[in-house]
Length: 113
Length: 111
Image 1 (cartoon, rainbow over the protein chains, first blue to last red):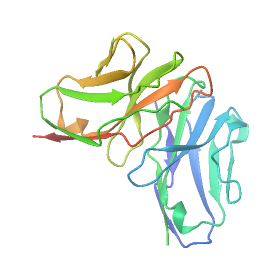
Image 2 (image 1 turned 90 degrees about the vertical axis):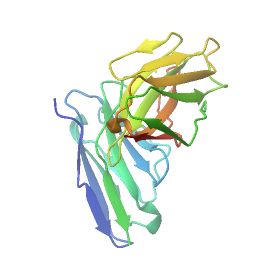
Image 3 (image 1 turned 120 degrees about the vertical axis):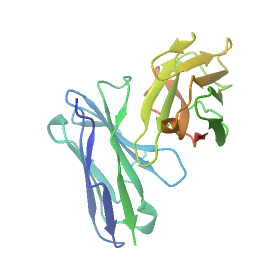
Image 4 (image 1 turned 60 degrees about the vertical axis):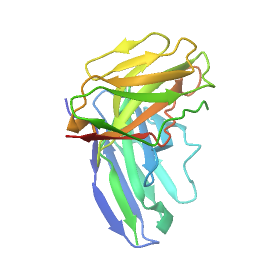
């Protein structure tokens, strides 16, 4: 069974540029999560989707971050414009439902210069 | 959100057992104890979870104190592939059920 797929794996951009990350969850998983992980820290939840609805986006910096989950499957996380402090690993995870085991993708390492 | 306390780092020798401690003195009745680990350059992966009783699976064992204020993840025979950051997380099934990660314990395994 295929795991959570993320792309790109690495991204280097200059500050003020836009950037987007893509996630394909495990087939049949209704719940999808985006996390941000700063160096030396544990992952921090940014947003959780139940199907196509964002049910918990309290930690998403809404001035520059946006996310969507079309048709309740794939998801895209966007940053516009990027700032130096956005350099981090962005992880996507999915689960069958809210309280089931979460399966993580390998992450996208973003470097903002 | 209930919090956990773990040592920053631990060392182990290959093929020896490893006991990773976690303190969670403010645990509530609806908190499940979850362990995830993160290998270098990978996303976290689920290891084990429990509520009150000790749990075993193919990866590890989880020993939970009778008062539930602490727990220990046990790797029975550490291998070099077990070198990772191990996160102990309290997951409140009575609310959002989100995983709140701390800094975890970085486990080093020496050959």
